[in-house]
Image (cartoon, rainbow over all chains, first blue to last red; front, side):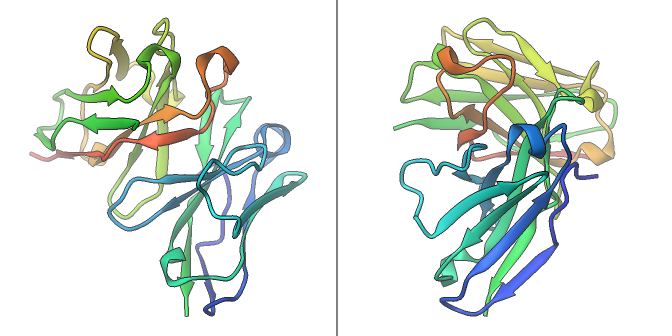
Length: 110
Length: 126
């Protein structure tokens, strides 16, 4: 069972904006922030943002992360066909001394 | 360029053990820790544990404590994950992944991983 809560799916039109959410608690997202990863079918995950919301080098500015309290968000602007993928959030849980993941959100670009 | 190359697919019987290797190249192995993450078929990601490359200290998820051993061989820049007493629900793709931060800037909490291996499918079946 996932430690963080993500909606199972989000569908948006081409060039629209999608906002994905990730809800945790004060032991993880609220205190440690959340990282975001993208995974295309059959491939390993790819880091999109660090827990402090910064993007790694080479990640498009169309991906932006933020946090409010115990909920982290990933906004994808100008949706492209290649953005169709599963998106996972992750955080360090200080009470579990473990990294925890969300269950993932499948993004469909209509 | 940074690369993590994992060992090939394995088929094991319940109760057996599996040892997955992860050979790193393109960076100084001892400067970055390695996490292990698995993904059951059609399911999400599950963190298994983390090893610091420079001193071999490990943290493992409570679920796997007593069943998993993570090690590293600095002479060959290779990390290993061994999982014992395999069950059918251990069937998954196992990934190794490198820390996104240099060890000098990492305390006791592993940072997110920025480079991932290609994954190793472990199938547990009688």
